Length: 257
Image 1 (spheres, rainbow, N blue to C red):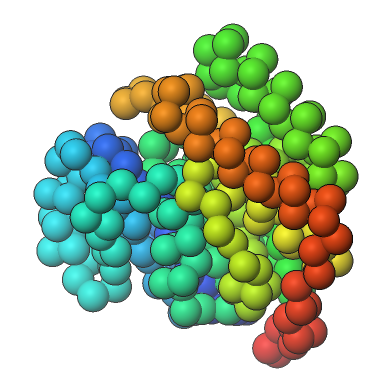
Image 2: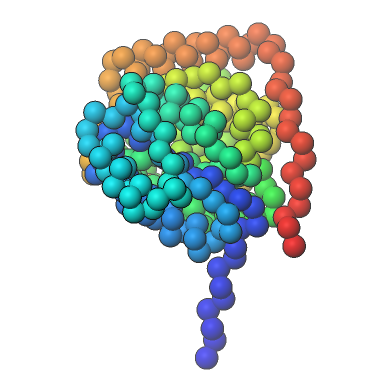
């Protein structure tokens, strides 16, 4: 009888965080799954949730999670909504481990597939990024999302397939070396562009994208759209102004034996 090999353990420490806005229906399950995967595969880790000014019961759900998980769960609360970019920037700032993983708090990605990213980065790869094997959204979002993705890829000469797939594992020193300023969803372009300017190329893996079962996307509301246009214009000016490349982080050490 052949025994099943034990899963490969990740040789670096890991910060996991979830940006959450009105995600009371989904955030507890994501936190639980993060603890399950990390306990199995990572020696040292932390789990963080950025509650970005939620107006539903997200704060109450997170308080119950803190009772369950104790000090192993950190909650960063924004009294008012700072936007998706603001939530990501807070998450990157709060992270303290060697690698950082994040995905959205709305439950459209399978946290269990973090194991795929960890395996790909186990030899010290600086950046592993998912791409949606099949986007599970209404046709309008699929069409507009594809048009936006190809537009920004062309505008910023991006190599990454899916700039808006928020299922990412990154070296913390790399992401914290970037002067991120966006407060809207434009932060995804700013982040990917910055990492590629550092000379870091992603390992790309197909991941599962699920239909949204709770809440609604904030992207297609007028105010977020207008903010995205403004911030994309700022990035475009920066792109063609000959802005200096950020200083690259030091070479990552080999994984411990």
